[in-house]
Amino acid sequence: MVLRNDSAVKTPPSWPMALLRRAWDTKELLFTLVAILIVWTLLVRTGNFHPIVLPSPQSVLGSLIGNAPDLAEATLVSFFEMLLGFALGGSAGFVLAVGIFYSPFLLRAVYPFLFGFRVVPKVAFLPLFLVWFGIGLTVKVVMAGTAVFFLILVQTLLGLSTVDPSLVELGKSLKMNERLMLRWIRLPAALPAIMVGAKLGITYALTNVVVAEMFTSTKGLGSLVVRARQHARTDLIIAVIIVTAAAGLIVYLTGRAVEKRATFWYIEEPT
Amino acid sequence: MASATEQIAPQAVGRVERLRKVIDPIILAVLILLGWELMIWIFKFHPVVLPPPSRVWTILSTQGDFLVEHMLVSLKTIVKGFTYGTFLGWLAGIFITYSRTVRKAIQPILVVLFVVPKSIFLPLLILWWGVGSDFPNHKIVITMLLAFFPVTENTIAGLSGVDREMVELTHSLGGSSFLTIRKIALPFSLPFVLAGLRIAMTEAFIGTLFVEILVPNKGIGSRIVDAQDVSNTQFIIAAIMVIAVFGLTAYFLLQWIERRLTKWY
Image (spheres, rainbow over the protein chains, first blue to last red):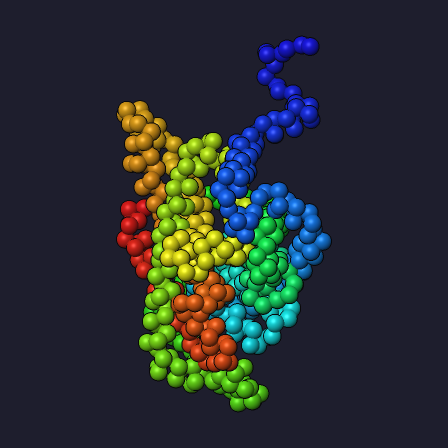
């Protein structure tokens, strides 16, 4: 084995070493997680809690495994509703934003309304949506879509109205008509802002789907957690929380990866 | 530190432009109201499905104080959850920025908490404290959870953006790390924190309203559910309008404070 301290070039470590280093990097996190588990176990062992109040980690693990098919089905249902709402709400918001952008009247007029809708919790519309759309799939898709709609609308308007003027000048000097300009200059320049909206929007969509499911549903993660509570199955409640957290993390990381991929050429200017 | 909605505010240059900035939204509002009436007229909607604007107005004028009274009950929860949540979020932001150990130990957990739909915790919280508990209760904890993250995120962004040279200057003049944080980093990050507070306020509204609608008890959200039970659609719409007015007021109040405190920025 040759030790080369003099070389300035570091050779990348072999993969088992890299993996070990990665693992060592997460030692603090592992410590926290283990500490939580130990405290939890100690509380259950010594605190004399009823399992309804605090089930043991083992029983949570048991219900994670035992109810795996139910949990998987609920996750898939929620994901389906989320994606449908995202697609419908997102495309509606995008099309409307482009329309508003080309109408000077609407561009001025719509601003206070966007503001008003931003501060109203969308959940307040849920009872109204239940009257309009019943308790089926539609109301969940609409709830998810509403959140995504406003985000994409605002972000697309933001992107379109902050396009670098020199790019627009360039297009004009190339005698581009407005259609070409929208396709090749305005929309690509607006893409980073739109993707920020999409990334946030998909997370919001999942949140709103779960809320709608909790309110009135027989399927999905939200309804599963409510049913678990009705049966006083706290272990199942915690299992659903863990699965939902994993689902949320997957959605968030996917959204972030897609955003990076779509706007790889974009370097965020320091604000 | 303008939010996306503010950044698309129409630019007013001349006097005519400035006038149209005010008049155009009013024209649009009138058009929407007319379209709303007209739709009912053409499609003969049942008032349960879509009540005419006049009926909503009747509710607002006759039951306005009832709505505001219950909104104030909700506002109490909102403000409590907002205060505790944002304070904890601010502390978490400071610790995560300045302690490598804390950052590595809890940031991944916070990221997971941030992306999980917070509503899923509600059944567990109700099991722990019931609906009768005063504090901590499920309403305040959900509101806190939602108000927590915008502040944490912005505090970290603000503190990590502090000018290195200023910090080094303070150190070279003999300032301790604590002094540097107190005199340089915290004031520098203030605009970020205040912007986070504004977002947190909107989130706090979401949290409280969600719990009130899902577990009807007190507050305007529960009154919306009551109205839904008796198919009183005009009441729901009127209530949403009251919530919007309070939400906007809270938002602009925070913005006003923000502008006053960050004049030097």
